[in-house]
Amino acid sequence: MTDLDTRVAPPRTPALRRAAPALLGYAAVRALGLVALGVWSGARDKSAYTLLTARWDSLWYTRVAELGYGYEVRLPNGDVHSNLAFFPLLPWLERLLHAVTSLSYADAGFVVGLLASLAAAWGIFAVAEWVYGPRVGVCAVLLWAVLPVGIVQSMAYSESLFTALAAWSLYAVLTGRWVSAGALAALAGLTRPVGLAVVAAVWVAGVISFVQDRSAPGTHGAHDTTRAPSFTTGAPVWRRALGMLLAPLGAAGYVLWVGHHTGRGPLGYLDVQAGWRNGFDGGYAFARFVVDKFTSFPSALAGAGLIIGVALLIWLYVTGVRQGQPVALLVYTGVVLALALCASSYFGSKPRLLMPAFPVLFPLARALARLRTSRSLLVTAGVAVAAAVYGAFWLNGSGPP
Image (cartoon, helix red, strand yellow):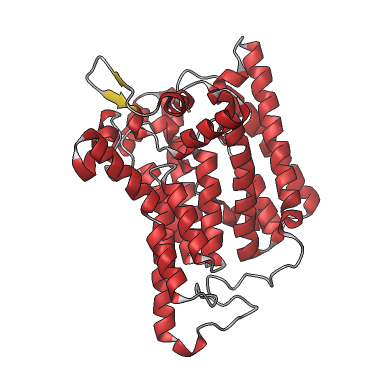
């Protein structure tokens, strides 16, 4: 089986109409999550809106939007938390919306987050529909919506914005729109450090397309309604090359600017991250964190849960490989998983850092799509309620999500 054997003929229904069931279902799940958060926060005499727009990372983004870069906090232990760690696209959009509508920066961040989450849901549907068909596309969106940490999709955080740009960039790769893929990858690279995953997907797909051209020179430009396993889809060489050149410009541009701004050269951004005690250690610190959970009985349950969660992610990824997911999706998902699981700090934030790895949900979406509609709706509704309650509990906790 090839990585594209499960694709279906291109539907002729307008794109938004095809995506409407997925978007309506997504909006319903997110509304349920917001209601649960409002009720839970009200019972604890907290403001749900403040939790969504003016806590933790949201404050850092709004400060960048309002005052620009250069703010830092020096902690008693010597750590330096600089706002240069936060990539600029979300603050730029907050500043733009503030200027156009006179919304506060926090309100602008909330609006951007909501709109970006809908764009992300649409992009996830588009990718899953292209590879597996519309029913799987709807199921994939609903599964992404009911993630236990799905409440982050409604926050003034950058995860939804990044997932939207990543999903549409991957869709552009799959459909041979190389310049769009590169431009969207560049924007993703201006959103979060994990934008490298989108760049890697574009580059690997581009290299494969050139290899395919050389191995089958007589087939270039031919159209195949069964969507054969090719990344070219008749795209001229210059478009593919331009897309590949555009892809890394966002991430590289910001990292180089930080190095110049701090006077520390090309690796200056790594120094900024080190001030937050954040880095890449191959998963050693996370493994120690999990092992330490087994020093007492109550925390041992959490440790077992973490092991099961990581094993499930690996199993889903391997299942995606076996089911023949397109290489671009596998590369993207693999890099997101590696960067999230192998980061050396902020272990409580790993669930939301994994949220952009939406293709890992596709095997579950295929299984859910095989159920009767009534059963799949019942399963999704039950998980949505549980996720809404957990999200409200989680966001009202003491630590940052």
